[in-house]
Image 1 (tube, rainbow, N blue to C red):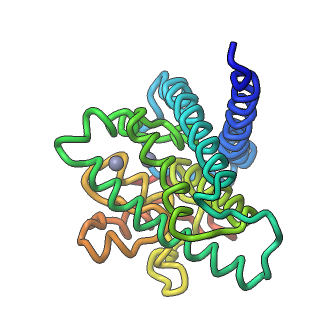
Image 2: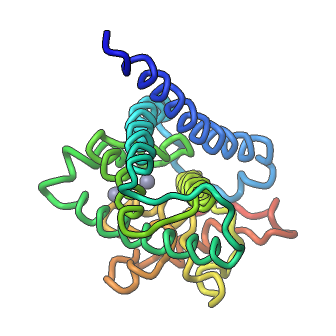
Length: 264
Ligand SMILES: [Zn+2]
Ligand SMILES: [Zn+2]
């Protein structure tokens, strides 16, 4: 047996465990929050339809495959860093530098995701690469990584690709990964936790909501964006009734919550 097999296997197992922990903590955490806060969250369900039987198990199964693919990408990324092909420093940056790097990677990832996602919805790609994710018509937090292998590869390659062009501090990469999974499970939570007016208020209208991505799952051809509403607005792909659907699901944070009926 070649001498590198055992360390590589250990490295792979470690990367898998890290990716798995991130997924389980985020999707499990969101599930627990929705369950524990049901009195507050039940009125905020986006769809009347409940997830189909077996949806969660299917989403979890496909997500395990994606966790494996992401673990491979993280091994590739660390190997590229060791080889000096990319530059990810482990020292702590100044706060303004960290903020700048974080904004840059999130904004670029949002653009990458929008256009990759548009590509996945083409006739040539949809069945083989994206149908798996769209089997969740009523998504649950477990759908966060429910991808076909091709989509998993495309989703995971963003980070090493970005690092090829932009050197980053590891702590910012970690923040980016945590923000990514957090926003991802929120978008698949099936509940609109933001208050009414959020999609129209200038300070928040540029952020996507759970309703935004939920409409992509229930409706199909709109709302391809990830973190921000910009690309869908610029490209004319925002759902025409996005605001109406949002208002139907949203409930004010204080008062009124218990009396609102389920709509939309
Ligand atoms: Zn899609
Ligand atoms: Zn989705």
